[in-house]
Amino acid sequence: MALETPPLRDRHAEAGAKFTEFGGWDMPVEFDGIRAEHEAVRSTAGIFDVSHMSEIEVSGPDAERLMQRLTTNDVTALDAGDAQYSTITDDDGDIIDDTVVYRLPGTDGGSGADAGESDGGSESSFLFVPNAGHAKQMHDRWTAYRDEHDLDATVYDATYDYGMFAVQGPDAIGHVDDATDVAVEDLSRFSSTWATVAGVECLVARTGYTGEDGVELVAPWNHAPEVWAAFAEERDVTRCGLGARDTLRLEAGLLLSGQDFDHETDPRNPYEAGIGFTVKLDTEFVGRDALEQAKAEGIDEKLVGFRLVDRGVPRHGYDVTDTDDIVVGEVTSGTMSPTLDDPIGLAYVSTDHTDPGTTLRVVVRGQSKKARVESLPFYER
Image 1 (cartoon, rainbow, N blue to C red):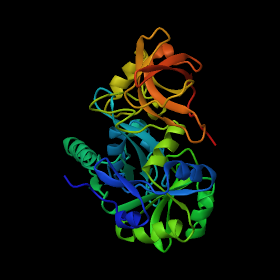
Image 2 (cartoon, helix red, strand yellow; image 1 turned 135 degrees about the vertical axis):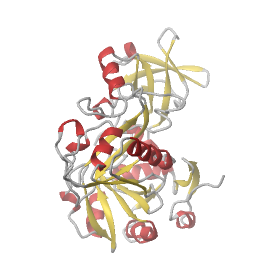
Image 3 (tube, rainbow, N blue to C red; image 1 turned 45 degrees about the vertical axis):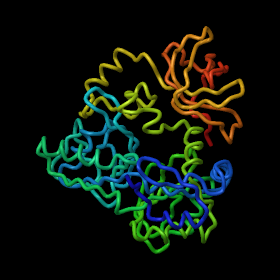
């Protein structure tokens, strides 16, 4: 089956990118080396093509109600231009995907109604961003729920209408300010605005996936080249691939869908995944009752960060044991941290092994390596 391609695939190839399959897309994994790109984002700025991410637009009189019922956070708390991190759960409270929800600038703000019920007098527009390869699944989920509950909302898969770029790093805001017609430094974290970037109208959001300040730009697919060129060519912002994005997000303690949770192979609820802050039990959403029960009864395993004391690199699927070599968990993500110069990882372990400082062992290629539980994030600017 042919892979999907981002709008700048050929331009990336001309720039010397190496490619990898991710979520059904053919994406650049690196340009000039993962470590160099990682260090550029930590010290100056880098730009990532993240056009493989899905985009779903939801609008209409019942848009807010639909979003509230299918995401775990409180959508009614969003004013126009606000964004929030959330999860999408099934009836059992297990994470199907995580997402960022935007109440689009220039639309009505939150209704403020109890339990997320729309007051019926406002009409809002939302954009939410599921992970790569999840667009059809989420479009179908939203439309099926809408139809079943007779809600008045339009659900549109806009994945192939937009390119998406992330400009991240200490100098990112300055670069975007230079290229746009709004004062990006005035945007607060998790807020967005419409702006002209390199002559192209874009959604500019102060969000990211690297642990650094920066923005994500949603641009029309056919105008993606102008927006990319404004940074990667005109301002010489370092081109970065998904390899550096992965090491950066892991240092920041951010989850990767399909790896740190997988609805099919390793179902986890938000409390197990360490993102219980996304769950607002005073709202009505699919999976709420199961999550209320899970919170009351407690969980058996939880995702933790760890740092290897011994030499070695932890990888997805490696066993985690206690000091008596009894298996107590499994690694979900791991790498050699370019910033910390130490091997780090995430793992689900039994809850009696989650306190920072707890000594664990990670079985790396058949050899038991000493590790210690650490508070997340590993890195924070």
